[in-house]
Image (tube, rainbow, N blue to C red; front, side):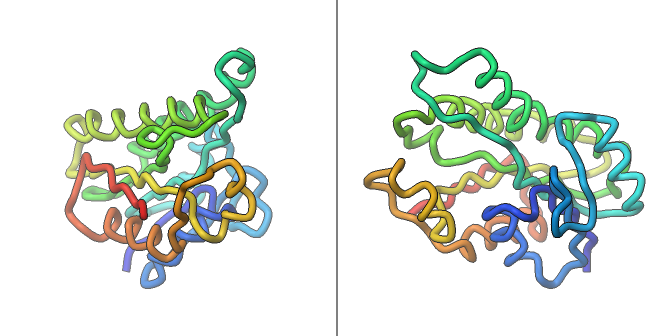
Length: 202
């Protein structure tokens, strides 16, 4: 049994991730802290240091966190771009950068990207751009991580549990069960793969 920190645990993807981690000791965290073991702001390195120090020894970090703004490219403001970049991209990079000081040898990081970098949709330019950046970051940084530490990304389409929220924005997309996305997170935590992007699509 591993000790796994799930950041963004109270979101739909976080809940899906935990479906694949049932055999492990899971410690939950989110920006609000509501219903979770800890509160953390991934855009703030001091907040991440505090989380990891408080948890102590752990074997894996799963990120299901990252806020995205949705608007057309023409109307997207600088503030909207910055909000998305600082949260979904830089925030997840922070998790890895700070987490390296605390994670056990042979541990793993799993980040979240998203299908829009492969299958774009209207209003989704910021999500697509940062998702593509996360996929690239994972493929490249895997060569640089020390102590046998692994890193992967899960790149899912919309899940059934979130279809009510996103369905109207995604005509022609086929949602997948959250449990299937959970299997992708399980593979990242429990397998030996690194530098991989696991696409979960219908």
